[in-house]
Length: 121
Image (cartoon, rainbow, N blue to C red; front, side, top):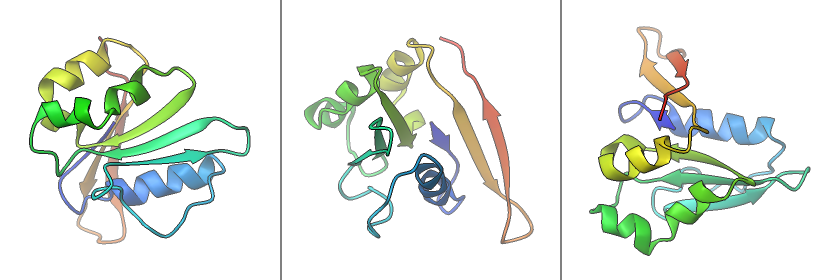
């Protein structure tokens, strides 16, 4: 889960993580408009970058098939803005397979304060 205000660097962090996982990315950037982008790593592990920012209701999460990504143990899900949807966030946290990366802009425009935690169910 990637958390932080607009412009905090969530998508930049996600793209760096995708590169570290061996994903060759097209230049489309954040999946804000597509909601989710699916990738496959060199080791054939599926990775999905999800951005829930533009959704209008939690019902849209189900309609888009997003829960399937989270319940598939063979996938890594990088999700932005999960905290906007408290019911879905609680369901995701129950799996216990989560890391929260909180990003904040710092005084130096070229750096970010990053806090990585392991939230419990």
